[in-house]
Image 1 (cartoon, rainbow over the protein chains, first blue to last red):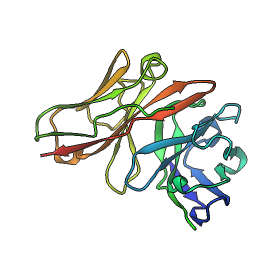
Image 2: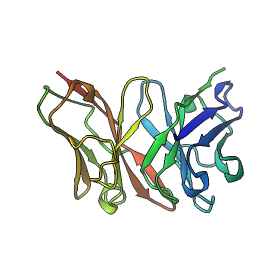
Image 3: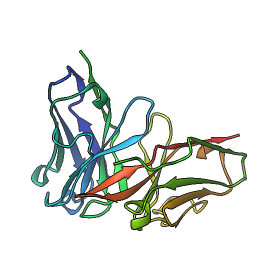
Length: 121
Length: 112
């Protein structure tokens, strides 16, 4: 059974940093691209970042480019999102999502339950 | 990048069919056959319903179908059932200096 378990969310002050993690199991992690998708309270889905199977291709939404860094450790079956210079508008539920391909596509066949990030003073 | 455009809400009665549109540009929906659709019930994670414009993952009802014409993709749900009431999101590649993914703003489906 595919499982994606996010962690690392919490309350953080504007301008500070936070690192999210996603522990994957139930599939061959290094065969697939992975993504972070967020959803602000009461709002729609927003793609944040994606990374190919070997970290050779990485993309970011304009809203986070230069502040967030996606990475993966295939040996640990884990995906990460380093979030710096956090803003109030980054407040959201952050989902880890598995791509169905080795490279990034808009097809996410499995999702975690999300970890909540709240940016507030 | 701008979000794809979806109607905020649609509604239909049980047994009827509805269609949700997803309008983009030649840089996203119109430029790639990589449009996906997701269903999200309140408090739940999204679920993949359609990929590559018109393909259904295993386990998804054949009442769900997808299509595309030009810069607009569509999700059609036939034989509406109460459990179809949810939010629906489209997604697509969008090309700029690097490949990215963009979602639509979401459509709330109400089954009357």
